[in-house]
Length: 493
RNA sequence: GCCGCCUUAGCUCAGUUGGUUAGAGCGCUGGUUUGUGGAACCAGAGGUCCUCCGUUCAAGCCGGAGAGGCGGUACCA
Image (cartoon, rainbow, N blue to C red; front, side):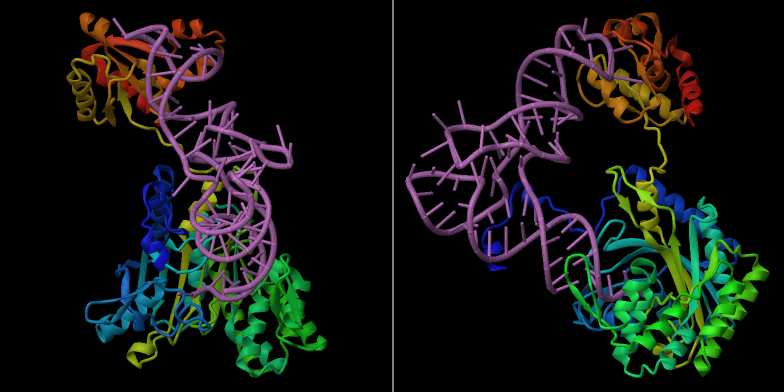
C-alpha cells in the first residue's frame, strides 16, 4: 500500500478496469435488453408482477447467508454508511425480496408473485462468462408451501429459456431436493457438519469431474491438473459406492429416475420424504406439460448450500461453445433456484414458504456473444461533410433525415471523402448521403447503399474499376431524399 | 485462498552468445484521388520491453522480489 501511494499512477496505468466489471458495448447491451425483455415477458404471462429493490441492503439484512462461511468478509461488496451501519451491494435478488416481504408484513397479500431484473454484485474471482457485476432475472412465489409452486417455477424457467430461442437438448433444468440429499447423508452415517458439507460439494461436481473424480472427493481426496490437492470427505469404499449409485440414478425420463431412486434411496425418513417431494413435482410438471428434454430429475444437483430448504433446480446450457479464439468454453449454469422456506423468518419470526427461479442474464448474453449470435445492428445513416467551409449543409440534411424518423448523423470533422466512407463502413451504416458541389448545383443528393455496394464490389478487381462503378449509388432530387433513404434503411431491417 | 503458466505497440507476435536508435503483420489516422468503403502504394501516430531491486562497462534478454493476466482448483448465496 505505502509504495503505491508514494508513486501515484499516471497515464495508461491509470486507465484500468476492475476485473469482473464488464464494459458493455452496443451489441451486448442490445442482446441483454432482448434477454431481459423476453424473460420478464414470460414471467408476466405466468402472472408475476414487477418489483424493484435497490442495489444496497444493510449487511445484516443479507444475513448469515454470506458467500462462504469460511471467509465471512469475502463475497459481498460492503461499505460503512455515515451512521456507521454496514451496507452491502446485493449478491442476489432473493435476499432483498425476503427483506421486502418481511417489512411489508401482513399488508402484502399472499401468495405474492413478483419478478425482478437487475444487476447483482459478488466479490469473487471472475472468469469467462463469470463477472463480479452481472444481471439476473428472477421470479418468486412467496407464501405458497405446495410443491406445485416449485413445479411451476421449473416449468416456467424452461419456457423462458425456450422463448429465448433454445432448442430441445440445448439446455436442461435439473431438479433435486435437499431432503433426498439429507436422506443419503443419514444413510451413510455422515453426522458431522463438515463431512456432510464435503459430501454435498463432491456430489455437485459429478457433471464436471465424472464418477471417478467424485469418488476421489468422497474418499481420501483429489489432485487436480496443476497438482493442487483437495481433501476428500473421508468416506469408506462401501459408502462411496452407495453415494455414487445414488448420484448416478439419473435416467432419460423423470419416471425412470424416480424408479431408480426408489431403489437407491434406502429407508431413511428424510430419504422417503425427499422422494415423495420429487414425485409430487414430477406429477405437476406433467400437468404443466414440461417436456422431458427440458426438465430432468438429477440427484447430483446440490446448489445453494445455505438457504435452500427443499426442492432445488439448476439450469444448464448444454451446447458446446467455441469462441472466436477457437477455444472451447464451458458455460455451465445459466440459472437455477429452489425453495427457501426459512429466509423470511429471519426477519419476521414468522415462517413464510417461498420458492423462486433465477436466470443469469449476463452469462447467457456472454454465451450468445461467444456463439456469434449477437444481433447485427445497423448504424446511423451518415451524411458526408464535403463542403468543409460550410458544415451547415451536412448538419441540415442530417436534421432533415432525423425529422423523417431516420437515425442519422452528419460526419463530424473535415477529413477527405475516403476516411468519411471508412467511418460509415465501420459504423455499419446502411447508407451514406453525399452532397458536394455537383449535387448542390443540380439540386440533388447522391445516396449510396453500402450493403449493395459491398456486394457488388466483390466482383470488381481493380481499384480504378471499383471507383468508376460507384455501386449501389443513386442520385435523386433533393426533395426526395428522405423517402429514398427510408427505402434503403427499411430494406435492411 | 491454493497450484501452474504467462507479461515487448490497440491486437497477434519476432527480437541471436547480454552490445549502439526495440521491429513486423494486422488495426488506427491521413495522403496518393479538393468526390467513393475493398485492393495497391506512401506517410504518420502509437512503447515505462509489467514494476522495483540486484549482477554487469553494458540488461527486453541473467538473478531476486513484487504486481498483473490466463488456466486449473476451491468457493459460487
